[in-house]
Amino acid sequence: MPIPEYVRSIRTKIGTDLLWLPGVAAVVVNEAGEVLLGRRADTGEWASIAGILEPGEQPAEAIVREIREEAGVEAEVLDLLSVRTDEPVTYPNGDVAQYLTLLYLCRYRSGEAHVADDESLEIAWFSPEALPPMSARQTERMRRGLSALRGDTHPTWQP
Image (cartoon, rainbow, N blue to C red; front, side, top):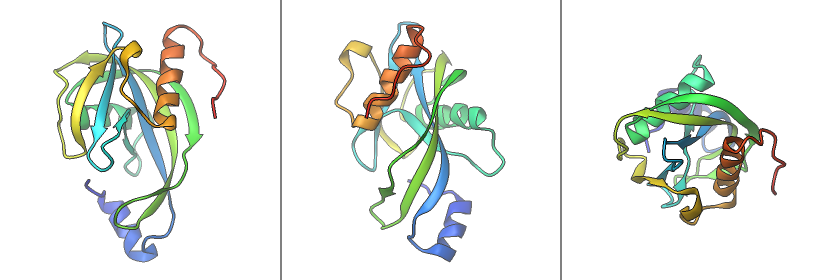
């Protein structure tokens, strides 16, 4: 996975120590009600499309960019679903990061979903009733997005 230049610059100063980063993630839904997921190249896990903000970038613009870069489709932001601190992550190279993630509900606009960069092994649409196995964090993201689609804009958090 490519490391943004500004993160690489910070890492030259702090090494692998914990780095706090702003992140974005999306529950992207198409006209058939299917959810867009990517199978991550680093973990093999099915997950929502996600990424980190570039310096000065607006979060809603960042998630639209990430969806385009990772899955090759255009989407639009419908709503901000949550702002949540994720658990720290230790990457294979030893870098430790923790993300403040803004989760968005997005609507598919155009394009054919496909692996568009080296961050994913697969990109696919899934029916909400047939989601692949996912981590608790990813399952919670999907639950929140699908709850919002049903009109429940403030579902309680599931631990």
